[in-house]
Length: 162
Length: 425
Figure (cartoon, rainbow over the protein chains, first blue to last red):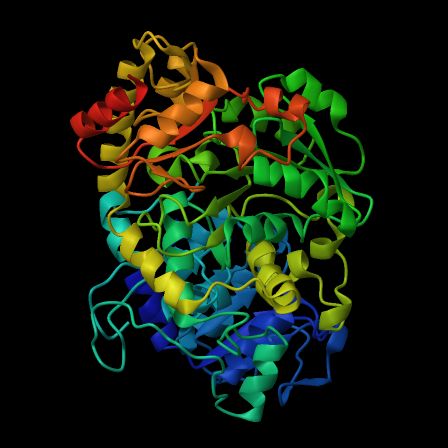
């Protein structure tokens, strides 16, 4: 539970247009800012959620106080969690109530964040759940960028299109 | 240690490489190139801020060198690797993110003489120092460690003696005191020993030796396990504290397990510039494709030559840990199950004179200052590669004047024995 194969991960990334990031920081030195900006630079829409910055704008999007503040009818493909593990169950409930009916399919928990019970519930509601990993690192690993810096991507292939 | 779904022989050929995306070329292209075009100002900014990874300038990274880095990282089971211009520069690159002026490291007395020299004299210019200890004596290691100690450094198989190090025992001490263990795995290679499996945190290589294998190209590498916590205890400010060169970025905080390698590219290689040349990376990759095949032959040859020498009446001692009679036989079985390498020393009863005679009379063995070549090599360490050591250091390294170092190649062992026989007699 909480892990996906490389093929499944690639599929998730290929269908990714909008990400809600819960707990994203406005400080350009924080890891969460790095992750958000990275996906924005790749043309994705990031909806920042953090009550501390509510009303400000990040990457052209207004920062929301909570998940349920997302405008009714907005389709979010993935929710990325930068909050302590103990807050995951409440977030899962909110995602199931507000975002799953509109097509949200992926719940991602950053490195160090895990919650087995809440993950089971999320999976039961059709969500792909990834725990204790960073989507930026996985994206960089799967699409060749980590290779630049000599990281062990685990990818072995004789095909030209990787 | 990171596990791959593939076995060693497959990884040594495939890891890190892919068919060239623009031409389909199957062998790895040599990117003989210095700078890389940015897609836009935004892209350039993101690269310089480390928000994206990409090639900027070949002092930092190069596509040919990157393949070698990923292949070595994969073979060692690490998270990533950086390559450098030589094994000696790899040692500095391993220490640079860890050490501040006034800091020290614990180093094995059995290290290669050039390393002892670098750690005794040269690193003092950075304000660093080394305390040398017999790393079999772990109590002594614990005693020497103080608040300024930032690493324990040893070789897996030592040069020149071929002594096999008890890595699990040393890593226990390192873990207890939260100090990273750096293992020079040059003489063993990832085929014979996996230091990360036994608790090492960083591995260094002189890729000049068995990794490239043919004596063509200088090179070094540092491989990171990705498992050391650089922030705990606040002992490694380069990785845990704000970096002035990057607007106060904290590397470990931001990049987690990738911090050491990203720091090594963004700061160490950027400012020290000990970069591996792409041409050297290519030659090293060619050699690396056959590492396991060569190592099997190196080891079986070394065993035969060492056993033969051990019975010769002119020979006082053979240090090869792969000898049936070696006191390290159990350690070899446990930590180096595929063999104790192909490097050892031999002490001659006839003293220095007999050593000179042997070197002058060999016809296949080459008298050179190198090891890990396909060719068999011979040298008198006390007068050459270990010459800068004090007599006391030479004795600690097992190098009396009657000692020769042999690096056994992949020729036919019968020819090697014949060559030594005629030279001794």
